[in-house]
Amino acid sequence: MAYGEGGYARARYAGYGSTGMQPPTQVLPPPVPGGSTAYYWSSWNGQYPYSYLSYAGVPPQIPVVFGGVVAVPDSDLGVMEVQGWWPDASVLHVVRVHPDGSRHPVRGGYGIVVDEVTRLNYSQNPSFEVGLNGVVTDAGTPVLTRIDVTGHPSIPAGQYALRATVAGAGSNGVTIPTALTGSLPVTIAFDARFSVRPTGLRVVVSWTDSGGGALSTNTVNVSATKINETVNQFARVVATLTPPTGAVTPTVKIIADGVTAGSTMDLDGITIEASSTSDGSRFDGDTLGGSWVGTEGLSTSRLAPVQTILDGECPLDVPVTYVVSNPSLTGGLVISNATALPSSGRWCWLTHPLRSYTPLRVDLKQVPVLEHAIERGVFYPIGATQAVTVSTRRRTPTAELAFNATSFADRDNLLDLMSDGMPLLLRAPAHYGYGTGTWWALSNVSEDREGRLAYHDAMILTAQGTSVRTPSPSLYFQDVA
Image 1 (cartoon, rainbow, N blue to C red):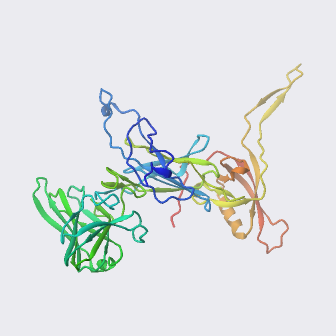
Image 2 (cartoon, rainbow, N blue to C red):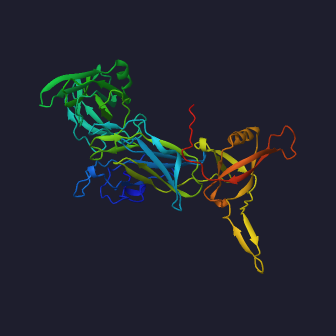
Image 3 (cartoon, one colour):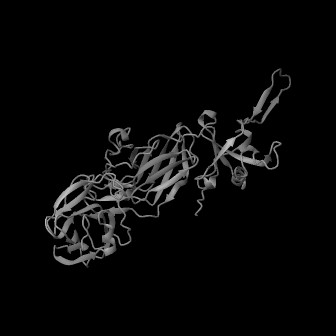
């Protein structure tokens, strides 16, 4: 189902800015309860430098390639999982927008350096979801049909696959449509299944030069072990080849040899990439992070690397949206649907700025008393019957925070979080009335058994806290296991 169709989306892809161009239609991953299911987009419409804009004021035509964002709440971990992507972006910025419109850079997501490359699949009919467009019979002249593979354990997405059935014994081959050009190394991969084991399976690519002249042909023979894996079950086949010098236009064929009469060859998930390092994993424009360059299901597709951020500072029980932006000249932004992170009963969460992706669930002993101090002087001018005041603005609150620790492990986890003295974010369920969360600088911490016996491990940890500013979003360190 497309992002902008049916119940999946609250609105179409509507241009968030002044641009009137429609982005390519996309397909959502399986919905997650509570997760966002659509997003809006915008492209930059800013000022261009003199050398980039004609006197007539018409900006250059920039290819429109759009990213995406999906937000999924995880109440068990106290985080919002945010997945964002943008093709060919080198840096991404992720911002959380609260119900009051305030914008908060997501820790660990404001500037994400994207190290992975955007993949490009030149197969023009990779998964046969629309039809058998462009597929041509080859060796054995098989009959081509589409079969339903919904729910098949080896096919992660899509409903249909190609089936080639031969009437007689011999070979069974098809030609696959592709938009690939040039002479870079090529990786071709596909899911294959045979009703009867063939004696051989080969990927054959013939080439022509810029003038249409025939060049040498690449042939990759699939190993016997891999062929064994394709009998009566789908298995991924990956072939890498180097085109001849001067190669421009390829013809891609998949041919099984030594097949019996009436046997079938099923194909799905075809990828054709101008790369010698690709792992050949399956993707098309309907994959999370993917987009169609042209017609949905019948064109080249991109797969941008998906960046995942665990936002351990997301407020509880209130709808928030996430903005993922590509700050480059040809970039833009995408905005998720409003999504709430539900609280877990009475539980609160403490988040350390250097470990914001792993907040600690805590149990407040009692609702703290908040004291809002002020510096103020009251003076009686000479001869006056009424006093005048001189004061500063009232300060953010201070409070005594008390946490229940039901075990030595709970105590150790709390003390570890407080060990370096950095501010901690306390997020409480919305019905506590404490807003979206408060950063506390905690002073001395006391452990109180409250008269329990020595071997009882329950205790109260108490600390005096002062509300402080949010630490810089650049403070972020991700542990590597």
